[in-house]
Length: 120
Image 1 (cartoon, rainbow, N blue to C red):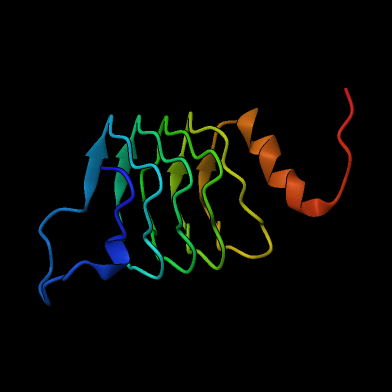
Image 2: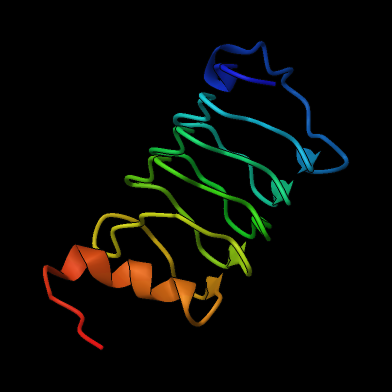
């Protein structure tokens, strides 16, 4: 599912019984701009160049997903699970990440927004 702009989809005015779920999918070049998709699931996916700006994805499960060049800005990632996820660039000042889960070593990417230099 490459290049889909999910923000232009005709979402029915009803509540889904389950969250939007992607497992081992390629979602490159897609957009979830401004959508509310609480508890969304992206497990073991490639999500390169995906736009999550201004989306509400509280309690999302993003485990083992590759977020190379994906955009997060004014995104609500509260309680999201990024365990084993890689290549995300999330500005901690421009996104809500309260109670989100990150793998210890990959979480150092969160420091990029601090304008500091990390040395070994």
